[in-house]
Amino acid sequence: DGKVIAGRPFNTPPQGSFGLTNKSVTPTIEANAVAIENIGNFDGVDQMTAEQKETIVTVAALLLTEMG
Image 1: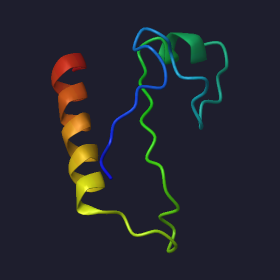
Image 2: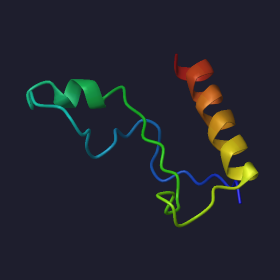
Image 3: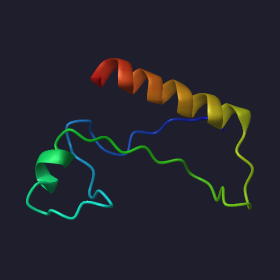
Image 4: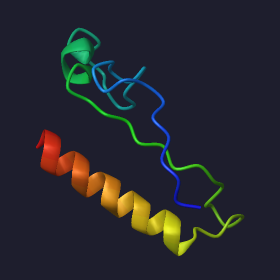
């Protein structure tokens, strides 16, 4: 439906980052990280709505503008 819900404060890093193999640098990388979750089963079960797509693009653009 395109609603946005904040799950964590922006100054709290995400719980984990997939693909990081050097655990000693993970806290440094995650200190400047933001995670975005899109709710739905978009692997052929649920159809993403136009409102969801627009919200994803808008939120990503705002985060990039604000956080670089």
